[in-house]
Amino acid sequence: MAMPKKTAPPRGRPPIAAEDRRQTLVKVLVTESEDQELRQAAGDAGLTVSTWVRLAALERARQDTSAK
Image (cartoon, rainbow, N blue to C red; front, side, top):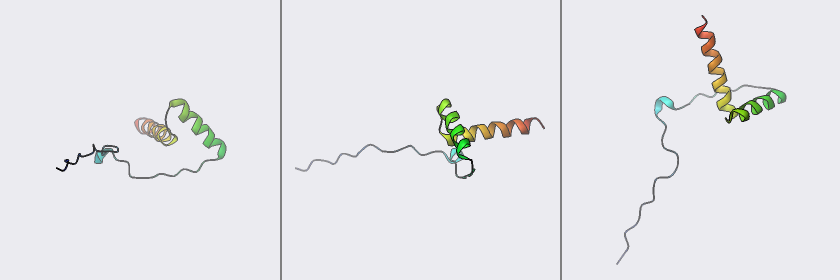
């Protein structure tokens, strides 16, 4: 008698909702010293450089927008 196959639980990350999905890439050129400064700041905040730069840029953009 054959044993029924067990299905494996789903693996990987759950899907991200379409409105939360990041699809646009913004490239920024920095010097080596600026790179180290960004890495240090991101590390101190417990974030990746990408996340830290995105949050810092958005915070600044929103400040500039609200001041007008």
